[in-house]
Amino acid sequence: MFQPSVAIPELMFRVVLVYAGVFFLLRVAGKRHVGELAPFDLVVLLVLSECVQNALIGDDKSVTGGLIAAATLFGLNQIVGHISWRNKHAERLLEGTPRVLVRHGHVLKDVLAEEQITHAELLEALRREGCSSLSKVRYAVLEPGGDITIGLRAERK
Image (cartoon, rainbow, N blue to C red):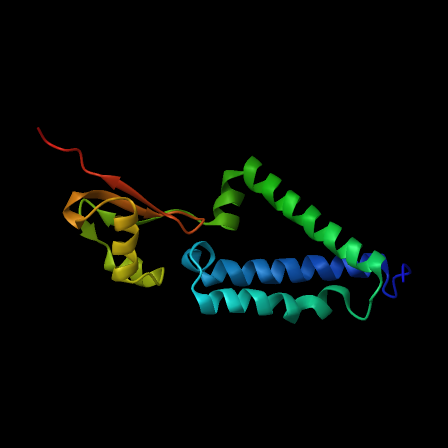
């Protein structure tokens, strides 16, 4: 029960490989899919854990192996967070960069298409911020975490 059937360095290496692979796939999936999950996106993420489970620990079914895999995952997450905090280039590479969706009331349709955000989703984000018209928007930015930040034009007196 406590004796791993896979060597500890192999177990840790498996975790590093799977972490990097899943991280890459989520990064390629885009900001919208991580920040605002549609029901089918949530299903994919839930099934993803089952898909990679055997790749993480192989044939090992020990408690120790599971704890080593979990500790390695948490450690990797801390390392990646620290690297992105210390190095702005690494932060942009790992987390992405903000993308301008609306500039001075004009929707940048090419950026919407690249980020797979529909016009309706953009309007929904504007409504959540209390904005009823695109003409009132100075900017709308898709943040690396998937949120849309809205800046409104100043009211003229």
